[in-house]
Length: 601
Picture 1: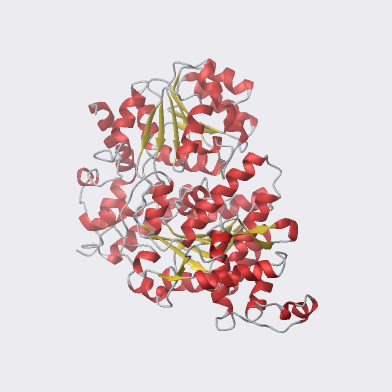
Picture 2 (picture 1 turned 90 degrees about the horizontal axis):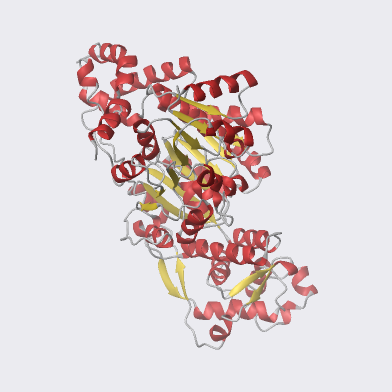
């Protein structure tokens, strides 16, 4: 690694060395090479283009999909003394012209721009009058047409290769299975690019998936037990559910705000700004919220509805614990979620290929939900990576029992068949349990051989059986019959007794076991005075309010912890704290040295 790169890393960003593949990526891109970088959220992707941007002559152009993300990144760069600006719809005409003048004058190190604006003739013409240092395409998975965050504007970004063939391009994402990687390379014309794949493992995140049983109350119990004062994100599929859940959490005494595309832009922006700048706030949101979230101290991400794919799940849960501290990914999941997602796929206006791929992605996610093995191993395998059992997911901490469900499966599948493959799980369970009701009598289902053959087991047991039959591909949801369960060809050997079916059964002790074995934060608090740390946080909060920026833009929590631990008594000592570049020492050094020196002992 060149001395120049290390000098920029230390003097501007306050770090003594690169992590993982960062050094190789920086050297490759700074030397003019193209790159595709797959690195988990919190892994330091931004440095992979920010350092080369400062090493190369000209202005680096960063394609960023969300306004809020641009604004926070520009604020963070400005704090470091980097000359950065953005072009987006929040600027008036005079502000746009001022940024354009700075670009043409060569007084910008970094320019952040949305893909929609970049693709306009005006913007491309503007860039043709300068020599871009490089092009960074952030959130590059948005180019994948089958993906959860597809943005049509990304498909046009191959124009950068056509118009500026000698300018290096670096595409970055935290989420891409092998097929999506190939799609990114093809659609962005990155065929000669070096591909850097870091581990997808986020060891600080604990993955927990629970059987849905009054999900809101389960969520409340989880938050109060594990994260009573923490910032978090709760994802729901519908706008109505977002509003109702946020209102309900507030009624339970929690600080919660809704966020979805049905709200007016000003309210959405205000809620996002509050989440970025306040501590302990929960945002309840649709997937419209999140891709631009750069908040490092989100301690949990919860799903009240099943996402559409493992990529979506990984992307959304990755917003927790960006600072490396312990965090939770919690989800409540039930058969109704499967029915709902199947309905979305079957009723989609997409092509047959789209529905087929969407169905296979959902099947992969169901496999993650139903596995009795380590969640992390299963998750990493989806992205083509091997891993050992983590000891930190719900299945590792409290291994679910597996049981021979062959007879139970035969009973459930027979109920589907005997009732004509026209009914959903709720009615089938009533038949199996021998319930007496008007609908049962109307269809004469009390006369069937399967009526009452499952009365020894409760409703929860049978819901788990039917859900796992769908996840195992032995039954499927038929939306032409309003969500009825129908048999698949794979059910035949089960009904004939030729195939053994194993299912998972979660012991009741799961919740207590998970609570007792809560993992500590990777950031050691040894030698840290809690009162001093609180004083540092109060100072940071006041600075953030004065400057109207999120607190973490001033200094990250991990930096404050090291300040409280090491207590430097001069500017030179301050410069040795990770996260203190020259500009931050200059800007905040005197005030912090005074604060530290005046704090008892």
